[in-house]
Image 1 (cartoon, rainbow, N blue to C red):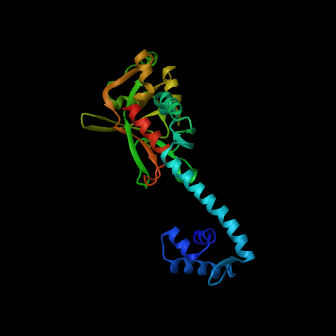
Image 2 (image 1 turned 180 degrees about the vertical axis):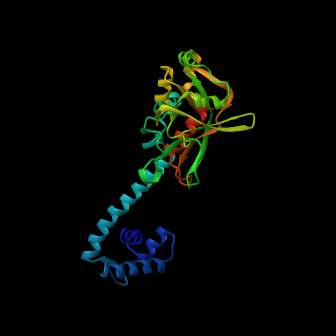
Image 3 (image 1 turned 90 degrees about the horizontal axis):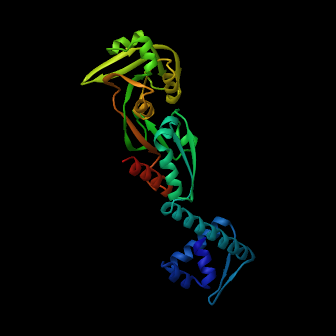
Length: 287
């Protein structure tokens, strides 16, 4: 189509060949193949000049419009690769977004005002491709996948409870004591009714029980602050309560294995500017 338009606009096969930097024979062959594909003659050829058939004139007019649209689409795609713009869909665990990323994401929107963030706050592990997300923030072990992972940091869970609960029920002295206490569990941890702790190379799996479990860390944090039981939560969730004295760390030295925090996105090839700048911005801010 591009060759045909060049022939019509330049008035000859030779001039079109010069414009396209190919041979005259190649131009003639491409136009002939186009006519064969369409099943109609587009050009009347004589030794001195070319003239358009009625079909050829209509096809040329529409081809110019189509090629213009293609060119515009390529320019837009190129701009979106180099200039952050458009809708960026991100999924982030609720508590991590609230405690660590809220102000960072706010600063990103000011730095890149042409990006419209659509953020889903959920601890559920979504399928990026199937559900149409550009970026996911994940905490914990990563399953084998074709996703690209960029490390943002690490976290560890610690055991803590309110001063009121400990005054009423006593303070566990060993991990095994947790089995005799009321424990509030995070239901998406993968450990079920077991807490996995480690200290100085020693690893323990401790069965726990209690009247409540939830799929959000802040929900059980608030219950623990109210004196409902002991929790095993990442420091980024309970840190402010520990500093304020609303919670007290139990079993110092015992904690979870290191939990990696990663930004995941589908592909590094042709990475859009909005994804690249968003992940880079978070990495720099958390560093």
